[in-house]
Length: 149
Image (tube, rainbow, N blue to C red; front, top):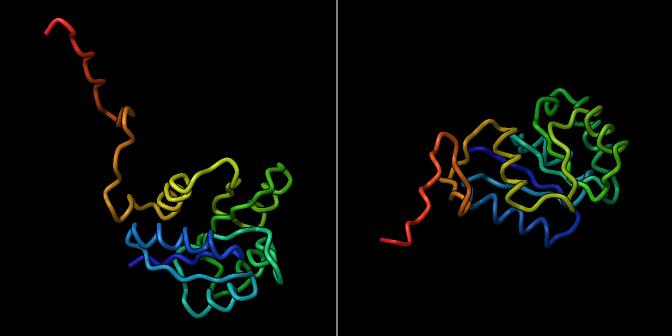
């Protein structure tokens, strides 16, 4: 089973992401700050880390830098999430080796789940419900209803 670590200092957000990821059939471990995350990452060896940037003790950026320099954790996929939408912050995350950088105000939980599936190159463990009215790839649009019938 694919293991994801959620690193978030806001306990409510950490629980929301954990519940949603568990519903996707991922094994979830969590940490409340970057320092705890480093210890958990070495012990649990998650396939992916979903991490906040602004946290107490060790920031998400510093945590990512340490992860990438540590042989046991250097290959773990990492998605950074932040309230900081500046281009400099995004570039810093990418320079440190983040696989994805998401701005919290610009994404919802389903966007985060989709980013996780993309980074892990899986199709999701649970069947994805189509968005109502959205056209699926290689699908012909439904004919308009004929009111004369």
